[in-house]
Structure formats: structure tokens, C-alpha cells
Image (cartoon, rainbow, N blue to C red; front, side, top):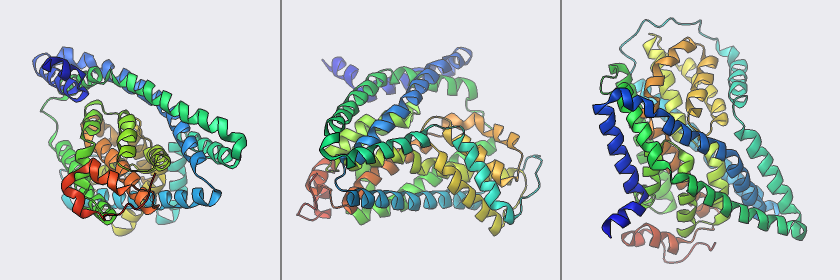
Amino acid sequence: MILAKLYRNDTVLILIAIALGLTLGILRPELAVQMKPLSNAFLGVIGHAVPPVMFVLVASAVAAFGERGQKTRCAGRVMTYFLLMTALSLITGAGVGMLLTPGADTLSLPTSTIRPISDLPTAALTSLAHVIGHTVILPVLLAAFLFGLGLGCAGETGAPLRRGLDSAVGWLLKALRLVLKFAPLAAFGAMAYTVGRYGPASAWPLLKFVGTVYFACALFIVVVLGVAARLAGFGVFRLIAYIKAELCLVAFTGASVAALPGLIEKLERAGCAPRVVRLVLSTGYTFNLAGSNIYVTCAAVFLVQLAGVALDGSQLLVLLSIALLTSLGSTSAAGSAFLTLTATMAGLNLVPLEALGLLIGVERLMKCRSLTNVIGNTLACVVISAWSGVLDRAALREALAPRLQTAFPDTVAGKR
């Protein structure tokens, strides 16, 4: 009986898979390295599922909003919140990198000619074009938004199609849950490969860099997201505890999208309006990736430090400006943050792009990146629902914890 319950518990299965992968990586590293295709295949399937899932979620969410003014107001709140969080996450990554100096152990990296500040527009546009040229998410989101906008304005004529979109959301999420049944196998492959390939003998500067990124993400969650949650009337750590199963899934598989079905279900149960949840989560997986942003600016500072270049205020401003634009092309797909970093460094032009190869070895250790992305987007759903007056606080109190009841008013701010 107990074994049957454990078998049905996805988190337990993933933990067992992680333990087996760790054991294989230690005992048979040469065999463990060959397990990499297991995780790559899983991430590949998840990556191909992202465009259709995002299209349906965004289109159905935009179409579900009432009159045009309501759509405009909600979209304005979403983009304002996303831009603020993007700016704060980029500043956090660069600031922590400058403070902790993980690249102080200078290597003999050749430096390029420093780009003058007057070249910033050209550098930024070139970097942004590089990212957009390698991703289909932005065109998909634009098409979905326009389609949903037109469908919402169609009135009764578009009602059957809107109902069809809502049904498609359910079917797509069911299909995604079916794919997630293979998550333990992917977690086994990822852990076995990581331990077998790199082991405990990573280079000291790289270990310091990994620690710096983890610290920056933790600082962002505690300070920035903590303040945002408190302004909305609850504690961020209770929200994190509420979605711990989804965070475990993301941590052990490396796929942020893997948490999407569970997050949608839990956030709607916690009192967030379904249309807000769909719109915020789907767009947030491109425009609100705080963890990826922290990684990009922290890695850029790290590589510049390794090259022995001292960033002054104007160069740091160039870095943040370019990263702000290139972050528009980020996605939650595996490897997207590294692509964004490449585009950012190409625009910054302080170190050769070949230096980015140093970071490939620790790519799979950056679990904090995906976890921060998921936590940030989950919080965004609650905060924007509260901001829009459609958050059922009674449901939120019940979902998070009984002991948090005193943190909320007795009345319900809004109904779904």
C-alpha cells in the first residue's frame, strides 16, 4: 500500500531517479556520461511543445477579457510589472557580480576593443536581432495576442471558437502531463551525466561563479519578490511552499515549462482569475525571466573580470541597456539564457565570444535560474490578480496556510 502511494508520487519518483543518477555518476562515470540523451530527449519534446501551448494560452486569455478597455488595462499592468522585475533582476545580477567578484582569479583571456557609448543603439539592436533570429516564441506570442484580440472583439460570432480554445487548453495540458510522466527518466539522465562528466573537480573560478549566481537569485527572491508579495498581503515563502512540488519538478528536469500544468491548477485554486493566470504565465515565460536575467548580467561581469577589464559606470550602463533589450528574446527553453548571454556579450564587445565556452561546463548546474523564473511568474499571477481586483483572498488564505489568515482582510477583494 505504501509502495503504491510512493509510486504515484511524482516527487518521490524524481528523487529516486536523482539518487540513482548520482550513484551511477560516482561509480561508473564513463557509463553515466552516456545517459545525457535521456534528458536531452525530454527537453527536446518540452521545447517543441512550448510554441503551441503558449499560443493557445495567450489567445484564450486575451479573448476571455471583456471589453477592450479591460484588456488594455490588464495588459498594461502585466507589462509594467514585467519591465520593473526585469530591470531589478538585471541590476541584481550585475550588482552581486561586481560585489563578490567571482572572476577575480584573472585568466589570460584576450580582450577586444571597448565599444564607445555612442555605439550603444547599434550594438543593442544587433544583439536583439541575433536573439530574435534564433527564437520563434516572440512571433508566436504576437500572433496569439492579435488572434485573441480579434476573437474577443468578435462578440457572439466568435463564442464557439472561444469555447474551442478553452477546450484546447485542457487537452494541451493533459498532453503535457502525459509527457511529464517521463520526467524521472530525464532527471536520472541529467544527474548521471552531470556527475559523471564534471564531478567535484570543477575549476575554482567556475565554482565561485555558480555560487554567486545562486546567491544573487536568493537575494532577489528574498528582497525583491519578498517585498512584492508583502505589498500584496502575503509572504513569499508560503507561496514557495505551496508550489514546492512544481519547483522540485523544475529543479530535477531543468524544464520550466514542466511546471506549467500544476501551476495553472494551483493558482486558480488559490483564487487567481483563470484569464489572468493564463496570460501572465504564458507571457511571463518570455518577458518575466528574472533568474535568466540575473544569470546573464552576472555571467557578463564574471567574464569581463576574468579578462582583467575593470568596468566603469558608463560601461556598466551599456551592459544593463543591452541586456534589457536582449532579454526580450529570452524563453524558458533550455539553452535560451546562454543564447541571450551570447547576444549580450556580442553587443558589449569587451571579451571574445570564445570565452563563453568556459561557462558551458556549469550550464546544467544553474538550477537556480529556472527556479527563480518559476517563482517570479507564480508571484506575478497573484500580484497582478490582486492589482486588478480579481483575487479571491479567502481562497488564497485557504490555499497557502491557515496561520496566514491574519495577514489578509476578512473581505474578499474580488471573485474569479
